[in-house]
Amino acid sequence: MVYKIVKKLIFCFICLMCYRADAQDTSATDLPEVWDLQTCLNYARKNNIQINSLRLSKKSSEQNLLLARAAILPDLYGSANQTLRHVETGGGSSSGSYGLNTSWTLYNGGYLKTNIRQQDLLMQQANMSVLEQENDLTLQITQAYLNILLDKESVVYSRDLVYTSTAQLEQARERYKAGSIARRDVVQFEAQLANDQYTLTSSENAQRQDLLALKQLLQLPHETNVDIAKPDTVIAEVVIPSLEQVRHYALQNRPEVKNSELGLQSAQLGLDKAQAGYKPALTVGANLGTSYAGNSSYNASLGQLGDNFSQQIGVTLSVPIFTKRTNKTNVELAKINIDQANLTLENTRTVLSQTVEQAYIKAVNAQSQYKAAAEQFQYSKEVYRIANEELRLGAANIYDFYQQRNSYVQALQQYIQAKYNAALSVGIYDFYSGIPVKL
Image 1 (cartoon, rainbow, N blue to C red):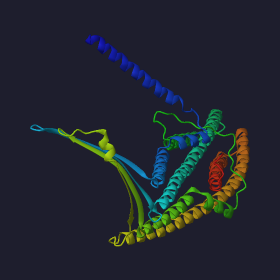
Image 2 (cartoon, rainbow, N blue to C red):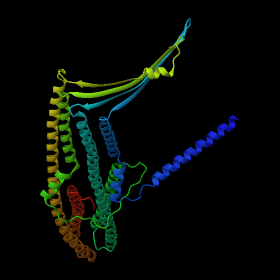
Image 3 (cartoon, helix red, strand yellow):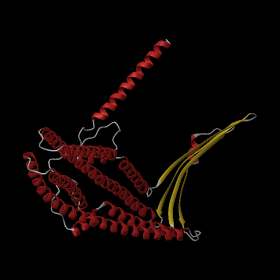
């Protein structure tokens, strides 16, 4: 019998482990193998721990609002009391009482209605906090994504350089065997190949590091492999909106500003609530009750419940006369909160205005630098092509060739960096004007 029970337990355990493994495999296969930017943003907004925590805070605010709305309604309580008493020498007795009671606040200086409005503002603030976190995460992911695109392009060009250097080295060795160049020229090609291989390794390392940064921003499981999709084109040159236009939009619509504005309104309502403490409160109360009692010489009957049925209603007026400075302190603290909220709003607007202006300057500078880098790259590319042809024909000095090659590599790196820097800077600036991030 025990053996059969053990077999069943082992079977259930194996089934459970298989189910968990299947669930983990299913979860892993739900993730894409290659991520585009929009997929990254959608996943982060849905699964980010900080964002989901703020969403829970918003739900808590919604419950507080429901509680504030319910506070204006009357309450209703029921009560029942049953007593049995036994005496060894003389029998026993029993009694019971039952009742309903209610109370309803008719007036308390507008505190309850003001509290409803304040809780509604706090709920809106919680929603703005979610949007703030989503915006911050959007910019972080976009920057990480563009860093990886930059790394990928650097790896491609670095591999091309290694391939070219390898071919040039082989050609140099053949020419050395033929006696047309000196040994030091071959060594120069070998050194250049080693340098290009080092550059390639550095580019690949940077790509792995930036992929890890993106993976951690997405908060993906550690066993997940991440790769990104490379768009057909990266928009680096667009018409940049005016600073005043974007600044005006940001100050009117950004969630951090709305959050601070709601905070000021909430603080002002806090003052109204504090001032309500000076005003009288009017409450109405009512109760219904009945009772019965019986002992060994007097039997209880249902008639007692009717005979003892009572109804009561009353009105209570509470007027604050001396509250040991409680109301005055509450009012002064509320005024301080208003001043603090005003400063917070002013600081939020100032910081946002400065951030938008910085984004504008970065976008303008990045586009200018991109145009200059693109022109420089085109000329350097043509000069390098000519130098390559001269080297192939044996008409070029090896040192002049490497001077042109180094100029080309430097121009290439500057061009790649400028292209993605312009795309990022323009994307961030457009984001402040309400345009979704795109490549």
